[in-house]
Image (cartoon, rainbow, N blue to C red; front, side, top):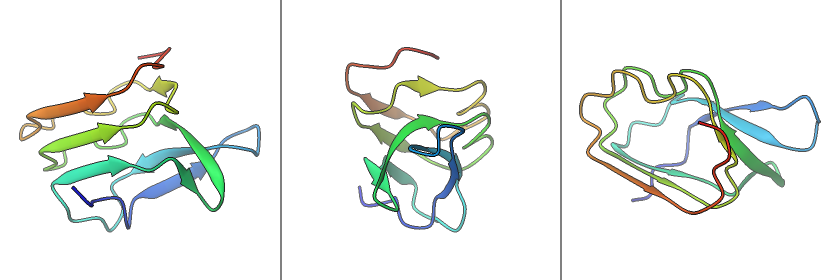
Length: 90
């Protein structure tokens, strides 16, 4: 898995962390949520971030504390999700 380039990010309200907000220009089926973006930590997967995409797998690191509503809705090809401990909000 090497699919993290091209993902879309949104700076969170605290101005110190990011959320993954969408698939962006990433065309990989196997996605890795990176630990940081622009030298700041990535802490959330946003609302509907991957909704309806063709991703097949996703690896979520332990710094992600929230997966927002419908983040992976209608991802019909999604077969594998690898998560670390630490998710507090789904």
